[in-house]
Image 1: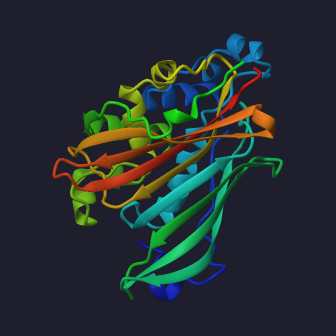
Image 2: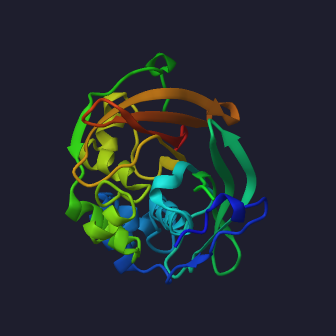
Length: 141
Length: 152
């Protein structure tokens, strides 16, 4: 079930891409309820327009959570040591996000092996929405 | 116009305590489109070596903000964080131990840094949260960088 046995991983190894359904109001409301982030810019069209957006925008942490899904489905939550991101651009309604990543280094420390990943979330126009990094412990083998 | 007293660096906020709830983890997993049974079936989680159903990686951020409303936090330190003034710029997590359902967590948040860019028109606020479990072991560190437009 796991892709991250140390023998299989090298610089350049790709993680499995995850493509999400187009962002809609329902996805943002479900995330608001589950995360507790009810900021009106994510839920109220009139409010978002008053701030100069065409409509509501997605929670930044929702995009990061989608990217986390890509990393933990490739490995597992237990193997994740570090996960960071920069929010590069706003995610709008209708955007179809794609999460991807690749291994940039394999390091050894304290008898364990770790893969360093560069991560990316882009939209349907290849516009970068978020850049990220992760460190994943590799299983033995 | 916002100006921020840099002596706030190091300021600590009151600790927040929370028990990781199964329904909360599952609602979160569902909301991000997870279908992996490890988040929905305890026996699957245990068979895969977890102590209980694990929390998706970013969920601990939500546990903290559900209890400590960040708007109050900014008010407390004299920052006008009204509509359109604050942007979430960067977010990072370090994980030392797994976070699972039923874990009793304590969140201790402090202002780790405040710095300016673009001649003071952008103010960066870095909030660092140390998360410990019921045994006093550190399980994670959360770092959260917001940008405040000083002229907004």
